[in-house]
Length: 435
Ligand code: GDP
Ligand code: MN
Image (cartoon, rainbow, N blue to C red; front, top):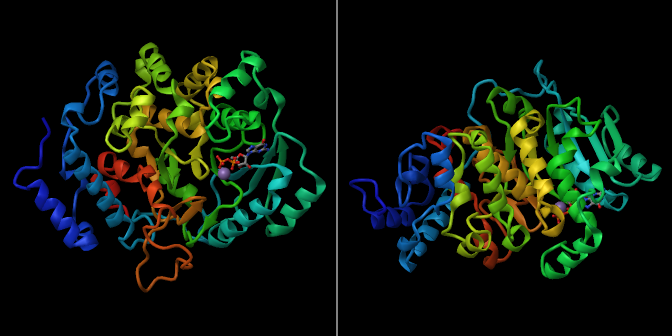
């Protein structure tokens, strides 16, 4: 059965949450307090972990309407409380400020994979990024394209960025981009007919892009010299200043991955990704990290159909249009072996596996959860989703163009938010207290 923290009635908790929104949270509310499901025991071996991974977060027999409603209400409240708590930046020692000796000194770059026609929208993104962050840190840019960038494109980018910015333009070799030899084009088309309704499924280039962003980009010659990269997409927005060197923050705090948005995915695009991942793990159980983020993968409460269609994966994933990565981690055997295996299983083409669920599963399985960082302070949107923190009243960090706690313009999409699941099950007290 499920357990509640002793001495604290579940309904008391909910009503208290409703009456005292965020102050209560800010004074030490621990979202782990409501422990439906969580067994408490740390898995001792990877075999045990593997068993755990095959069981849902909450026992199906316990999931009656009331339990589901309560858990969803609780998650909504956790998200609301968290996003309405005024924050500025991580409260850690040694943040590197503009002008400090270490400012801008990480082996890091911005990465923009774009086409010539994305020019205007990528300029919008990088200008906001410069204004909110990089004008003080001067990190370089790498622009990649499967086609040739035109001279007009390159000149427009150079003109849009400060004169002293280091900018490189590169092509993606066909071997890293095009249909790999194990994929048959006719068969691809057949499968895509069946995947009709899924976004971008009928676009070969989108499949190429997802495979490239899963298994190839960190091998690109222009990226080899870097440890960290911050991925930037066309048409995104940054609403608040970031007044410390985020790459130095990652390094000093032993983070390998930084994200801002955390969502459920379309399960039809990854029908066999999870079962194939389990096969991989049966062969290589030693890649599992003892402190991996398994609850996040196993959530069957919020989108039970997703869990069912994928045969056991919540579909929770980091939205990779923003991601700050330690590429050296990707270059290690666990990630590389997983990529080789997934590629051999053909799901980048015969299904429409996204780089987001692929990377997220790798991180949630092979990494210590404490090395994954939610940049709560980065106010960001990629249509249609937004991460917008609240600021202290006396702060001018944010430009006011996003509303704290606002996630998506349509109510029916609120349920796609997996952030509360991460907050409740994955973040520890140290993490919760970091802002
Ligand atoms: P969405 O955000 O999932 O709807 O996908 P996007 O259309 O934004 O594509 C994701 C990223 O890959 C963006 O940075 C795009 O500019 C880039 N991208 C997508 N398809 C291609 C392509 O065929 N060629 C190039 N060079 N970039 C692409
Ligand atoms: Mn995009």
